[in-house]
Image (cartoon, rainbow, N blue to C red; front, side, top):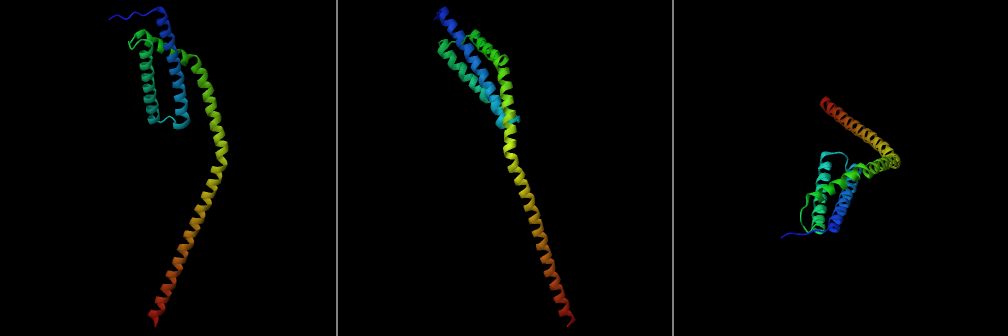
Length: 161
């Protein structure tokens, strides 16, 4: 069975796949920012991001092929999706990366400024509690030593009698 495709259908499919690739580039930048913001650069975080992005790409391309090419895989449409992805990464992606990195740095500075007094108070309180606990332990040891000494003196007096 041959499937005839008109020029307008081809052009709309090409535009759609360029758009899908462009949106996938935006999603990649968003996932990269969220990973950096919440998870850091740990290997497990990178794996989670990579798997989630691959699943997103698979479903986006799968449903795009179903809706725009009648479920028929066409290599040139996949290449147009790749072109859309690369066009985002090389143009707006760089700009967005700079903006998100500066936003990340400002968020980090704000969090440090807001949380620093709490952590300073917490560390001061912790050190005071540590010294209080230490002095309490020293006092307890001194009381035990005094009781032991009193027992020893009492035993010596009983032996002398």
